[in-house]
Image 1 (cartoon, protein in one colour):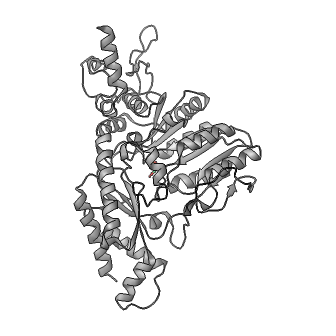
Image 2 (cartoon, rainbow, N blue to C red):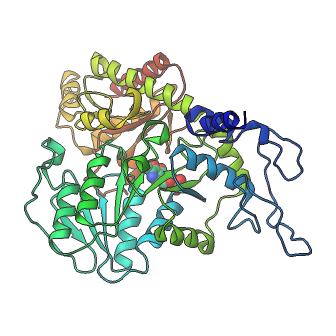
Image 3 (spheres, rainbow, N blue to C red):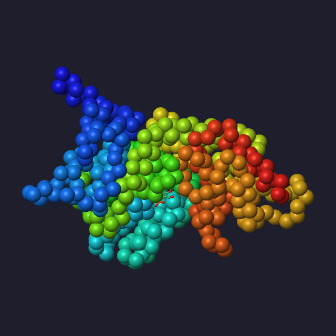
Length: 470
Ligand code: PLP
């Protein structure tokens, strides 16, 4: 009987993502293990910053995993419960919550790369969330770390102290498609090894914001290990553990802007890191969090716990709606002036990689549409307007679509219950600047939980309103 009980608990804890999210990875019979043994079903919010010791100087407050809790900067019971669930979701060995996604990036850089010698190298993409890219560049430049960038559209460039240019033939074919005609992540790894450089940190964002390039994580892990490179960290904010678990594919650390899907309700800024192994890198990351102090408050952890209960339901619905919207737009005359970028569409350059990587045919809730200048030119000509469509005209048209679409809110961020639309070029470029990594005609769509037909109609209204303005 005991055995049976144990195996049931094990199955409950380990088998189903939905069960982990709802029960909090625990046997509900143990719910009474809160500080006052009240049997509260919902995790209490432990607001106390400190926890009393007894006459033997022993601590009595323990997190659900049995860790004793002393002070709320390194450990808070509400935060710890949230960490345990995230850790289980990603199949990791440990999790650390921090005060934002950017604090998580900082902890990885400081923990994994900081303090190394002058030979340090970081490999990172040129496409991805713009603040992470900017921070990686600044951080590496200020610490004399070589930042090697892999970019589908860009020739090979190495930034950093020595500003080296390393180019050798790649012994392996890079994926043959338009975007990958340049130098791939694999070539960068081979080049570094060829010149005797070990890459300390390989940074991956997949799918990468806002064009949704997908990285073949299995293949990167295989090559990195063969070549003796270091830690592989994946920003998995957009994938979520519901769709892909990078640690199970051999990556070392998973990072989330928990502000996005993990919370899903637009009311918390948080970051999460989950590790495959409790190794030296991880010890240093925890040290950075503890001493750097970018910790999450207990109320925010409580909101994350609350948001996470519906994570798999939200991701499933958002993925289904996004696929439906992407297909509908691709087939609709109303949107024939736009390219639709969605990894669930066979037309996406990395659809095959995504198909192998993503579970159960769900591809997430993020997509983009890219306005075609020649189509806009056709609309101008048809209305008798003179002149050629320029960059400013593309930008103005897109901004009108974004702000005139109904149902959608024109706002930054992604992964929430509400659908958001944004013109990324305007957000990422200061006036007068150009950003070669974001198409000027790109509108990023974060699909929420609204009715999918309403979402399509809302976008159509935006396009019609923008056309009216020509
Ligand atoms: N990574 C990705 C993919 C993001 O989209 C964001 C924010 O938009 C971040 C990291 C940074 O996260 P935060 O805003 O929580 O600091």
